[in-house]
Amino acid sequence: MNEYKSPKELPPEAQGALFDLLLVLADSKHLLGLRYGEWLSAPALEASIAAVSMAQDEFGHARLLYGLLESFHQELNLPRRTEEPSQYRNLELLDRAFADWTDFVVANTVLDTAMTVQLEAFKESSYLPLRQRVAKMLQEERFHFQHGKGWVLRLVSAPKAKAELEHRLRIVWPTVSAWLGKPSSRSEQALTGFGIQDTDSDGLRTRFVERLGPLFQQANLSVPMIAWDAITGQSVLTTPPDWTGWDESFRRFSRTGPDRETFAQIEALYAHSYPVE
Amino acid sequence: MVKPDEARVWEALRDVTDPEMPISLVDMGMVYGVCVEGDRVRVQLGLTATACPAMEFICQDVRERLQQEGFDQVEIEFVWDPPWTKERMTEEGKIALRHWGVSV
Image (cartoon, rainbow over all chains, first blue to last red; front, side):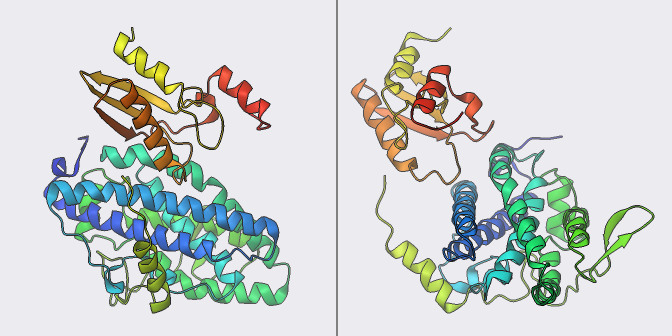
């Protein structure tokens, strides 16, 4: 297997595909960090601490991922995106603030896990700069799922909260499931063909379902998109994503980007940044 | 065998402390490598967390200290592989940390 040490060493087909995916991940983690950080007033002091700590992790990962993109701009002259909402590639469920703590718990388990499954696929990546950063990010992700899981099990003890959680899971599922990528797309072929990630999008979806299925089962949550296969003892996906309107390079169905309130926060972040060396 | 110039850099880095703990970067195990070429020096640093809020301060302190040693160009490279863990700390560092009430 080849090893690529910089963007210019990558095969041309892989350059664009990896750039797109890294920007999708960076923007998604940036926005997830912002969302976690909005929960300083979580339903428990411990949860507030966890929210802020997880926000910090996500910002740290965004920092690393944006850093990886720098060399693509410098070596390949790939244009920088203009700072406008429609150019943001974050997972679209992060476009607006969480409505309540249930939204937080869903993001913490489902959205965060999807991103982690994508990162895990880079553990043996042929793209060295990425492989070298992934272990640290995964180390920091370890407790995110544990935290989400703890809250899922807590919420389902109240029937009303359990029903609401099931309802939200059904809403987010198609988008998150699609976010892992479209099978046989050109970018996916480049990413798997050159060993940048270790499996295709369906392989990622399988891992994603295997991670969440046992939790849903333990919590006795009825999520029709996942079924329990009694013969293999594994969780399987029952409904593949509907790809109508899908934009693979943005990994989004809609290109609206973060809502106005969110984007104002992002802009403010840059406007107030102090010059550093 | 560490080259004399590089040994001097390691020694100088013992004066630079982690802004959050009064322990040197060397004892923290955050210095991954040092490379000297003439009046240029490259330092490889591993941060304890990807979102280390003290990144800029650490860089500034490393630069200033090595400029005092006569290096005109100080290049800092962040290393994430292998990830920093407390096992990288020196015995001295661990003792100091325990003294400050952090269990390692």
